[in-house]
Image 1 (cartoon, rainbow, N blue to C red):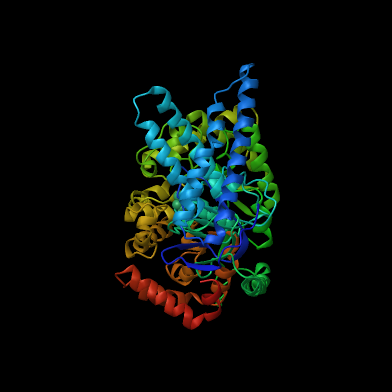
Image 2: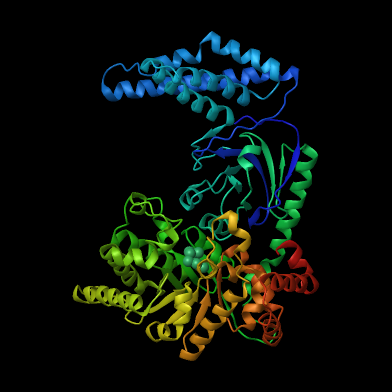
Length: 592
Ligand code: PEP
Ligand code: MG
């Protein structure tokens, strides 16, 4: 892609959210979406010819694409197709080019604005006639407009799998499957207009350690494909077309940051132990097999959450029992004796399966999700359970189910597990009879009956991402309400405390695998509240372990005691920020 050297400018993304810290430098690729924004800026008279050349190049590319499509159609139908001919003719219509030249010389605006204005004039005229032939030509022109504008703006359905240069993906929104499928070596940074810190794409980007900013309003309007970008995700800032000097400065800043992170590398080999020798476990959350190596090198005590649905988000089917068995077996063999928690498929909401795509829902977060989906698709669920049981002989596996809301649902799940076990026994297939079974606590209803739920499962894992969403009634991926999404809300903290107490009372372990566990601002608070098992993205493990190793349980309890008296999330966050900056200035500055 051509690198465009427009003026250097800095965009401070005030309302945006850092989903994964770090500094990235690369060339912008803009992912197309349904809404086509048109950037508008003034040009100098001397730039008119350059802008016209840009249009001619875009038109030529659009022509080539139309010709290729025409050929494809002809081959498909086995005869010449000239449907696109009128469009091709329109693209080279001298009148169109004359009008464009006249307007750009008069208005001195970028070519996207001029082209859109001229072509919209043509479309309006054709569309307003009573003649069907002309109205159809208006449709052709709309098609051309989209094509040329996409080309001009460099927005294509870019295949992010194979990129040739360091790339910054700029998009309105990214799906978890797009994120999972991208070329991890070449995508250096991500900026999206939508999404929250706990939207699944953001979680995945953090897991992949790709600096990511979400909720960056109108960013696709501000940036053009081919712009060179510095994404400073530590300060929520983008520098567009930076000078060599600025690039050098950021390269240095990046290496200082990397050095700092690497300096914490020694922690990988040390246990997550408080100063007073309380052994805490820090496990990894993963969604892709590729992440296991990172979990091991970061010294994870195990896998605390394997989001199994990520294995299948891109597919048009559910994987067969054998295919799943092979994958789970591989995970277990790689992890050896360490415990591995595989969560049953949590499809729905922002992770639709191919089945979901057939039935759009008005409220997907409150709809056909997680365990509800599994219970309505018993064959799919059984396939996964059988595969998991079969794999259980290859390591230290336990099964976890998401979104349990009632005892009935839990019992139904147990029933499905029993059935899978019975079948395997009958077939003489070995499995681990003692395999543990846990549930995620991510709904307020589950917390309120945690005491009962604990009688029927082996452990709890608190999913704060959803627990906060459902407690506060705030969509975790909606930027308009992102400021209301606070895991430090006293109501959320109370529910966490209640869950820990219920688990303690019934003598079952409780861990936390929501993003709150990975945020070192909350480490002492959670320790003080009684949490002993943390699970998080591998990228966050060093910081959290450092926090654990720098505190005592008594100190953590003191902090928790103070915080649990507070009535407002803002007060709690302010307190924790001040505490961090005073006691751990280095961690606060670089990782906080
Ligand atoms: C959670 O809700 O906190 C959780 C870990 O599950 P997910 O983010 O996959 O919904
Ligand atoms: Mg969840």
